[in-house]
Image (cartoon, rainbow, N blue to C red; front, side, top):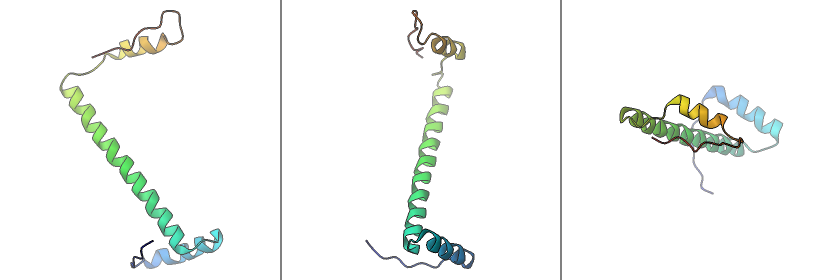
Length: 88
């Protein structure tokens, strides 16, 4: 594991030390967990942004499915006459 030095904001120092004491974990563990959580959330946000842009491009290109067709398909699930998924 590598070592990185950084300056922590004054208002974060006491909560960090308190959390470390309560959790009986080193401050480095808490910081690593926080960074891992941040990167996971950031990756999810970027994926959602890319998927949103792709969806908007589909709409602009006319690649859409009528909502009534989707509802009919869903309502047919589990019935004897289950419909195939609607296609563009």
